[in-house]
Length: 524
Image 1 (tube, rainbow, N blue to C red):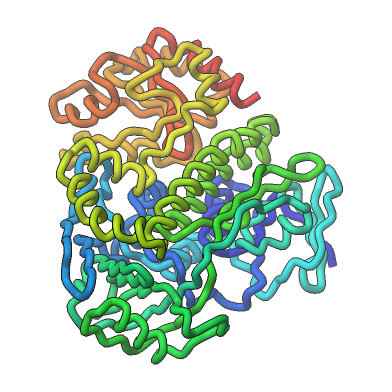
Image 2: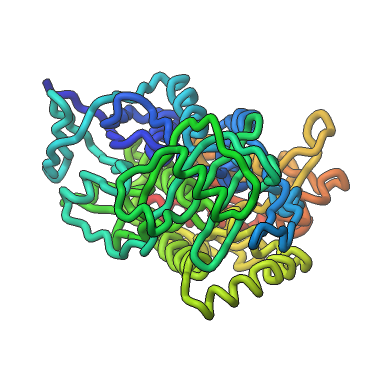
């Protein structure tokens, strides 16, 4: 049997589910297949960052995530059984995001939230469907899945680090593996580790971390596998429990495990994310990049990959943009991927090295460095921007450059930057985030300080783009002062916001024609 769809998503992890959901909400006929017969109970990813919560809010899912997760309110550094430093994290990103914290929420729960939302759009994950063949036919792609062949116009490979699609295409996955193996456990932990925070216990030859999750004393425990376990492919929970207690040098007791795992970490990436004879195949998430767990970046990055690609692919599928728009997926995401890979690799190597001098420096400086970062506002904001991913921008991408050629402002905020966070007065006078203005599936035109007549004139300049634009006005009143300050002042202007909550550009109201001409060129 052979069935055809517009887009086929392979892999039902966070990046695959987000891709399918973002396409389905834009009316694309999408199928999603996964080789596993049921959602995985194991959950390597443990945190959801502010940028991901902003994107989930756009989908109407942030409240579900907050209800099932737990904000991490503190970070504790323990060495030789003694607390060397403790840092309060609650509201560390205050004024930068509606979600100024790190949310402890396992990958399994994140996937469940996305699955429910996808089901609400009438799309079900087809389980037990392992891809066994791939034929790139130029104008379409054919995959052999189980007892059928599926033809699709576009293929999104979200099938993990061992991606069948990537292997079938022969795309290199350059990088390497870290020297040490690690264990993971989802379990109850009793003892002197706070349930509302993360406790890190670094030593020269060991490393243990306890991350408080939602539930009564539930923790994600991660640590280096000691040499005495050799190359054993697995270990009992009792063994892992004993290792965690010994290496942390804390009187902790581990019990009631949901699952355990031993694994090796890698740092690898592809050199391109669009492939195939006609460029109809895309690599996202772990299929495109894997890296250390430093900062909990992996799952969040995959969700951003999906969010960046989906609106562009949906426009192409619906005939509203040419296929050249899809080149901007790699144009924008590959620099992010490379920066993330290099920074997490350097930090993880420093955090896990057993070499005497770096290990001694780590013991001496780690707490002091963190204290310095958190003490000074500018350093704290930069650190939160990097870890939370709200600092990611596409200023050097071709879409941003097209906006600049069309006369967009170069600063405050610039094309390609994330739509800044600010609060304005909602209809009930309660403060609302500016990002709530851009909750639709396509572009949003925010008119700052414009009258109804000025809006009508601007709409007249958007001929042919009307179905892709939602119009919002932000009045220059005192109740909106915070939002106006975040958006660059009270001067009348037109802001075009991309569907992924990044700015296409900002123009003076009198330049509306140039703004929409630039958008038309970007979609050609």
